Amino acid sequence: MASQAEARGPRSPSSWRWVVCGLLFLATTINYIDRQILALLKPLLDETFHWTNTQFGTVNAVFQAAYAVGYVAFGTLVDRLGVKLGYSLALGVWSVAAMLHALAGSALGFAWARLLLGLGEAGNFPSAVKAVAGWFPADERAFATTLFNSGSNVGAIIAPAVVPLLAFSWGWHAPFIAAGLAGLLWIVLWLPLYRRPPREDESTAPASIGWKDLLGRKAVWSYALARFLTDPVWWFFLIWLPDYFKKTRHLDLKASWVLLASVYGVVTVLSVFGGAVTSRLVARHGLIKGRKLALLTFALTVVPIVFVGQVGVWPAVVLMGIAGASHQAWSANLYTTVSDVFPQEAVARVVGLGGMAGSLGGILFPLLTGALLDAFEAQGRVSVGYGVLFSICGGAYVLAFVLNHALNPRFARQSFAPLVMRPR
Image (tube, rainbow, N blue to C red; front, side, top):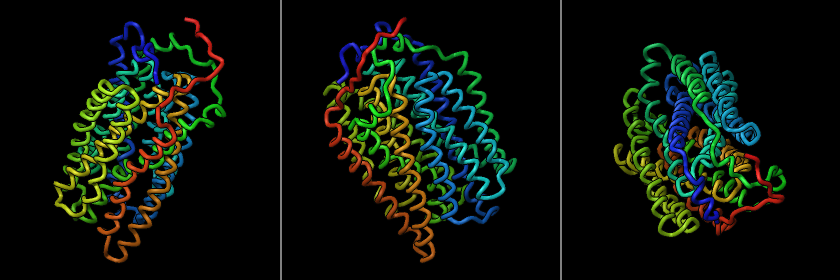
């Protein structure tokens, strides 16, 4: 459990932390616009490149493989270089990669562009979570994480509204170029506005924590396994929902963008509410029990997604929105447990390890999804295939909660020796 001093954080928390949170939100929004463009353009690119579901799944698996490597690489870089430089590097890499998509002329070309995009985008969450750990006291971190993480929902709302407009007006290349330019503009804002967190000056954590120290901790594996099982569900939503509406509801991109935007609108509103619920649970039951209750609650509220194929279009949108919001609230709590449990010097690397595990799941699930859908589509039963996939999504969080709790039942604060006092 975090000490009372840690729960209070700095003696006088700076109001600048909310400016920092706003910048993290903006970066996360750009991040999710970038990664969703390909999925939204799939119906157009299908006609241009004539790729199969398996090829499309493979392209996305390449992204996930690079994302896995990038998570560990940027987790290490951010712990060593600091948030300011590490985050700038991440944004620079993924912004250039986004624009390179416009030069792709085949599935292989998109795979190369996705590889570089995955490497860069992996730097977002290790950087953002470390920034929150430095700027916010423990009792505010879940709420701050929910706020910046809501950028993923806002990005998912903006993308289906803007990407088709750009594509139909200036061609499919235009959204990729615009997204890359937005990321470069963010760097121009970030470099002069980001300041050193006050909590860094008060750190009494070890000067150096080795990989062997981290990998031997059950607390690391409890986090990593939870990410492995649940991250692929969110990727499934981002990648396959446009195809789901087209193949099972017979709605093309022009007709389905309102539904997609509505899904993520529900996600945005409910996930922020989920952050408030977490704060209430922590205030009432304490840090450990409050976090556990929040994780269990959000695991259970994903389960109704198994019924999405048995209801009409708009009820399906609501079920998807509830599941997506539950994922985001679950994810925000899971991220926050890292800064609750580990010293700041290790936060980015632990987040990176968990992100790598989530990406490994994200590699496997698109491959399974593509192969399964091709098989059911050949039988004329693509709706059944999607039903199987939504059932997997519905059960993933309950299993993740059970394993997370078994490996780290008390969210014990991890101590590392020798301890040193940083000079001010």
